[in-house]
Length: 597
Image (cartoon, rainbow, N blue to C red; front, side, top):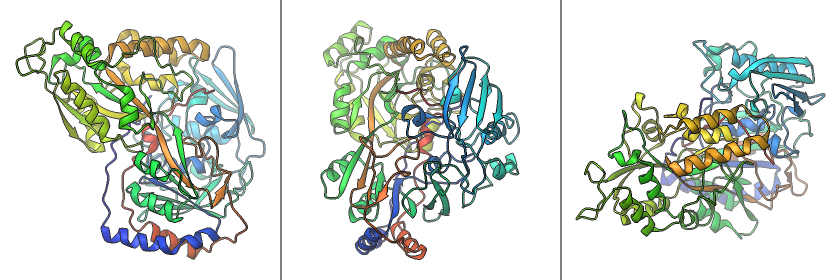
């Protein structure tokens, strides 16, 4: 299954005069904002298309426009179902039957049926091997090779038969598109030239009615045919910013209703403010320090990196509790293994966890043959000083990895005789350096970065699988026992049977230490409490679906704003926006989703 690894977030700096202009607009619009039920959402991001076959950068708002057949939230929350209202699997784990909502309609009023799912899946499947294969966007061919057949029994019943037992039919996060819109679009156009211009046609709660790419905002109207009834707001605006500072300023001044992705410092400052609530969301992001373990092309500067005893010893010098409490100001969970806490398969590995102790790290390095020289620098078994180079950067669409995290790690390693030089890379460079060595990747020693995939175990464990080396697996580590466990997991449907396999694989990668898993940060947001009600609890916004935008309601009676007034507000608000940083929240996420509690 092909990955969509996150890239580092390049931060663009807006011109100071434009910030002043934004501030001026912010002082004149709060009163108008309070009078209109226009929902305004913001994120530090950069969309590039409304075409699900061509974009990774616009998961938001795609997940508000289209439904998945099942997916992550549909398995976690009964009130966030997708195109199917229920499903079941045969006793042999090969045939899945989906019940489609009766009377489901597309936002243009056309019937939405099982045939649309068959069309979407076959449209993707049949492109495989084509010169214009659909492999450049969120809806792509990754994983579709498990399908043996897919059939619409009738308008509301769908069956998918797979080649081996697998939960892919409910885990995959493919958006379902309408046959009557896409059947005439060629693969060549679907790969990019076709932008799917507004108004969009989907089954989610929103219909995109305008997209101003130069100013980075979308406008939406409620889907009048949404299965739970149209949302209560009259219009929605999704604004993209190049940095979080102006976004937070507009939230404070009342020009925004929800801000995705504020920093820990901003989150702490907003907490307790009048008419503002903060949001702390458990997500699938995990930050790690990877060792370059390859001994071939692209190898690191020391053979010590290939030695699990060396890597294990280094692990004792990293205080994961301090990473969370100091590096993330308490807004992260200390790291453990490759399975994130939000997954039902999570284990904190307490029975084998290393306890931070610099003396223990020193003793283990000595015992493994890595002695200090007269300058207090460790030497490897070839007598070469172990002076390591680290690359680091925040993958786009993720919580920014604080520089304090890097500084803490570098400081601890220095104290055990391993000096580290740090190079900060942008998103394209860190992706290139950690990609396949045959295409120019490698040549570094340590990498502090992160990823955000869906929380099913197969996807999460791919971080260390041999077949994924140079893709999901940035450490280039390979272990036949581990790969066998991951393969078994991919072909097992019963969660009770999956868990012990996951535990074995997690323990193995922890002990062999191609990675030190540093932390699992929260995704931080903030929202106004004086404009809309209906925010969810304890997490106000979902990372995987249309909630809560289908259920928030404006406070008090109000008349809708005119289109011209709304447009004027938007232009003022987004004047500072420059094409920015996200290749996609979902670029970090894999196509598979979990079976969740």
